[in-house]
Image 1 (cartoon, each protein chain N blue to C red):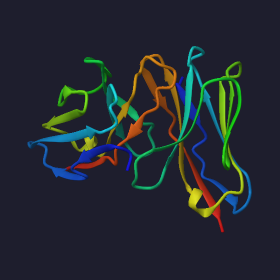
Image 2 (image 1 turned 90 degrees about the vertical axis):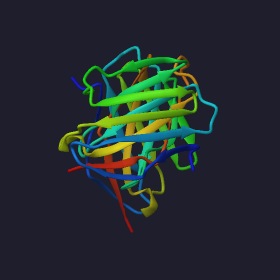
Image 3 (image 1 turned 180 degrees about the vertical axis):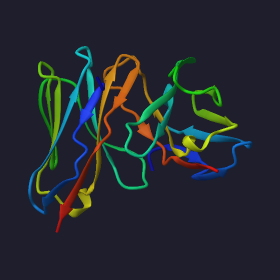
Length: 115
Length: 109
């Protein structure tokens, strides 16, 4: 148990559905991250929320929408996804991205399948 | 050019041997370097972090950093079957985290 909890663990959705992924961290960290992990590809950083600022990867499609209501909770809202969006979505948190020792701790991930 | 490059493997070593995993990175201003282990179907788990040139040892694991060569390595001594996993190299550059594709390691009993 890393202190980062993701729900649901598995999600199957159609291309017209709207769903949300949830992440909660119990570590008192100040930054939270969404990553996408596809087979044979490096972890892809999608969004970072750090000290109330958001940094995003400009290549992430607008059908992914993050929300961070406070430093402990992070959501990823999904709508009109495509089959190529099927992947493992990982949430992570870290103490302070401004420091060198910015260790990220990962949740168990949500395995998403888009039909 | 990829920010972080790893040999994808698979790398196979016999039980008890030393496994050597390598990683190169492209951004010279990178300051923090991490090795994560990921079992199949699981999330990445931090094994080692290293921030300055040289070696850092923790149990059976040794991380080595050479900033001049932009090279990070992980040595696993006395490899065990439970070490069989994918090992991810990660580099922190400012507000960006870059991961390699991972090296798949199999330790043969």
